[in-house]
Image (cartoon, rainbow, N blue to C red):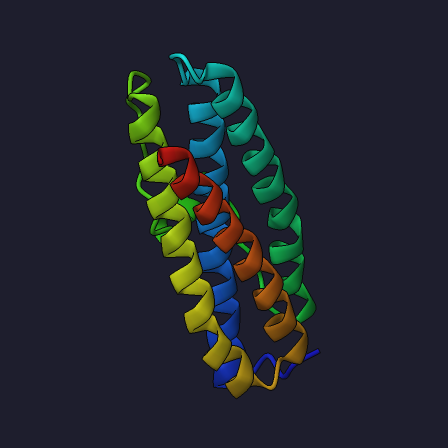
Length: 153
């Protein structure tokens, strides 16, 4: 376990929690789009959004547990998720498939940017394990961006 009294560790926990908030918000948005997509590509996009939501969901527990492993606390409520995420809510159930794809592409790209910025903090904290996990999460988010961008044509 890292030293919880170290400023670098405190910053790492804060960034992990922001990443956790982004994943929760992105999971909900991706499931929203999975449920509400319509049009000629319905089946393909319905399945794509579900696959991506499952991948994001599976990362949530690992992210939260990482904060605990290094001596920090995790998010505790929907309010704390809302306070820490950079992913905007989307309540419009009538977006076009292209609007959904573009929004998820952009949100996943924001996640990639956040992840890449976290590398410096992990290094400063001497947190090699989180550093390696960041690489895996970055690769997954970049793949989602690629799939969404490709589906847009």
